[in-house]
Length: 131
Image (cartoon, rainbow, N blue to C red; front, side, top):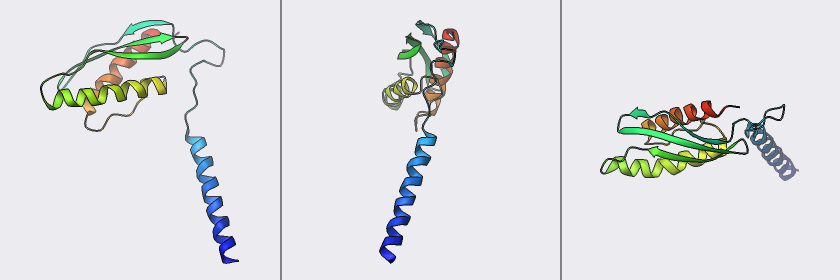
């Protein structure tokens, strides 16, 4: 009997966790409720944001109302650690923005300044693309 109770508690805990995760998963709301795309198709260049180690500026490519690519126009590229941080953080930030379909992304640990510059520049590009 004790094993059955323990098994039932485990099953309920796992079920609750799964339901909680589903509730927490962001919903893709790119198309607005009236069927209009969230962004106008085109390529939009964001503001150049001066961060501690250089300039961050991105350009967003929009197709079908969605972010399809984000490219760095400028990213800090100084010698040593700055270049290492940029080369690590850049691809992560780009993928997160495409996945989120917005500039609402998490900062990359160890690249806080670059992340903040990315978010600000991308948001300014997306503001231009609002439909």
